[in-house]
Image 1: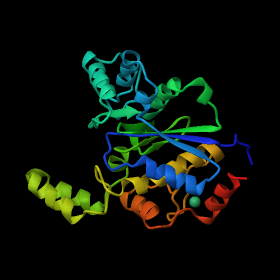
Image 2: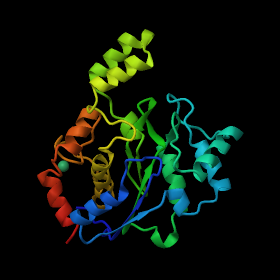
Image 3: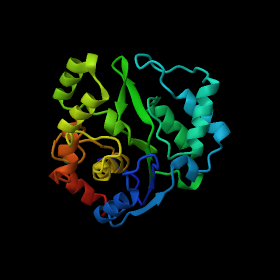
Image 4: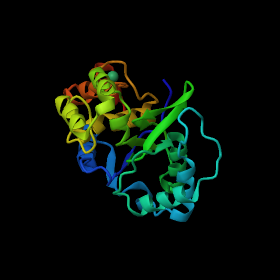
Length: 265
Ligand SMILES: [Zn+2]
């Protein structure tokens, strides 16, 4: 087995744009699972690191995906895009909707802001973000809930937009697309309520505990995902798989429970 630096500290960064995300509760969960780990909760990432907005805003704007079918090139961001990023940086409780970002570019920007003394593999930085992240593969960008690595990013909008909703949802949407009034839309959502994660979903904190574990496993053991649908590390592609893996009370499969124990010796 490859040897990894022992994980000693974990820093969780809050996402104030997500009202139902409680990072303190997630920190408490991690302390119970990994008592030897020092866990702290910090402000929103760019605020905490006192990022120079004039410097960071153009970088964030350049990470916007304009065409999901084309890999991002080094284009110059538009003035309006940079200004929009500045307004988000100044007001992180605003949720950025309808914009897709290249997840690895955002990760690189965040990495460049880490303090040198905290930039080592015995410390994990896990950043919650309201930005919608995607990675390129198989000729298009795909929305991701989590970008594992250093630092790891977990998207509170990606959990809503990434995993596919129940099949009936798409059938209903196509059938009524022509006359889809807000009322019909609301009724449809009511009918399927509970079967997918919505914005400001009350279950968000519980669901995110599993994604934080994925980031921890990736950094400490080089393996983030599991193919057991009843394990919190399951790589879900459907909303119903997310709910099954994260909310049905399964925790970790035997293999990953043993791996977690190994992390602590
Ligand atoms: Zn597992």
